Amino acid sequence: MRRPMVAGNWKMHGTRASVAELLEGLSDQSLPDSVEVAVFPPLLFIDRVVEGLQNGKIAVGAQNCAVQAEQGALTGETASSQLVDAGCSLVLVGHSERRQVIGEGEQQLIEKFRAAQAAGLTPVLCIGETLEEREAGQTLNIVGSQLGSVIAALGIEAFTHAVIAYEPVWAIGTGLTATPQQAQDVHAAIRAQLTAADAKVAQAVRLLYGGSVKAANAAELFGMPDIDGGLIGGASLNADDFGAICRAAGN
Ligand code: PGA
Image (tube, rainbow, N blue to C red; front, side, top):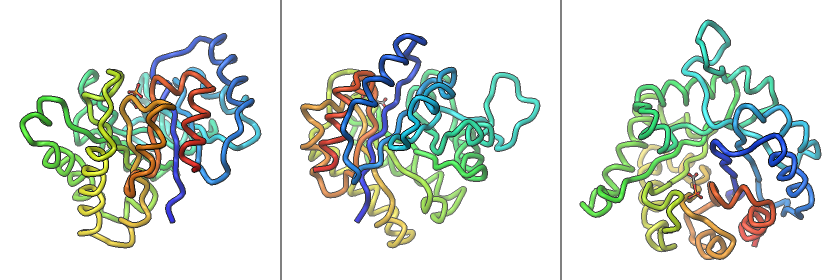
């Protein structure tokens, strides 16, 4: 049995005041023990989020890490080892906003994935197609090649300590959600690709769905056999909504 995970990606949101409020709201939530819950605050707030979530029920991750695992001369970047030191256990790698807006390439994200694991972080590899690619019938090719390049570079064993998030780019922050069946179809293809490399790893790895997940649609998505939880953007900024999504994953 895979333990479901619900991860909140706060993106570039928050002020000291709103983060304090969100932390207070999160500490009021009753969260199911059966679900691994994590939040990914902006780097600026990681310290106070780690401190504010002292009861240990919610893990903390970073939204990005440097291509090298150890601290050094790399202006503006943060090493995975520094994230570990700050109390992080996870890091997002290859979010579509970083691929598309920042221009992060495949080689870079492979290096980040490797650096994260070298320092002891669990990478959450984000993959997904654009609307144009979906409409051209390219979804499985695109997602397969995004995953395939990491498997080719780092080996299937790298997925023993990793999470994969399928996030169709057209569903991120748009209010459009993949239907449970659309998401399940892609998740099943991802699991089949992993199975072809190593069935045991494939059975154990968590596949999260992301893209306009809300309290209202979470249960239906999480009910699909290959959807092991969610990566939540907008709805993770509201403690009650996020709590409800976590509870949906526990049912
Ligand atoms: P969203 O974002 O839930 O706001 O669509 C998801 C994500 O980008 O991780």
